[in-house]
Image 1 (cartoon, one colour):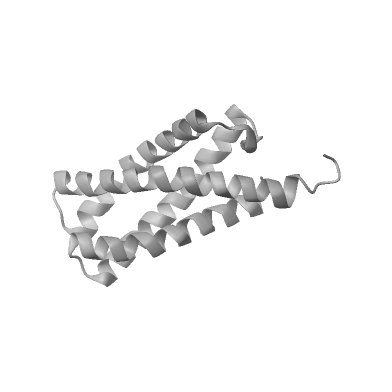
Image 2 (image 1 turned 90 degrees about the vertical axis):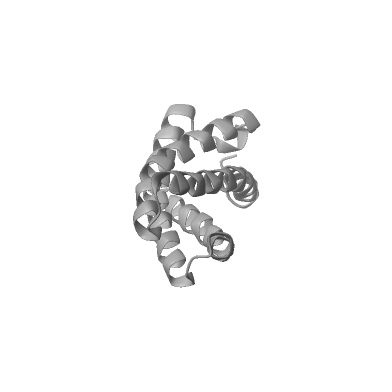
Length: 141
């Protein structure tokens, strides 16, 4: 993927996630909408930067033909990404929601479980739509 497409992928991924996570988190955490929105945006921006770096490295190491990645590879990919992001986000959650470590960790782990499933579904769909629109239609194929 080009730099432009990687940015598009990240923004689309995070934008759709925000539409799901913010309302759900406001209800589950009984936090104010404004606070949860700022937290979600801060986490989203962190995730986009991490996403770009992580996927660039992952593609370099495991190859650029994403359509050939099976379920096990996609699970491995998602786990690695989420563990790295978890390390960065727990302190942010503690600070913005004024929570202790354990409640912040539980909230972050809940987000990890959501994003593990979401990332697999989103990336599977994105890769297959991309293949149909971009790669399959390429004259060099």
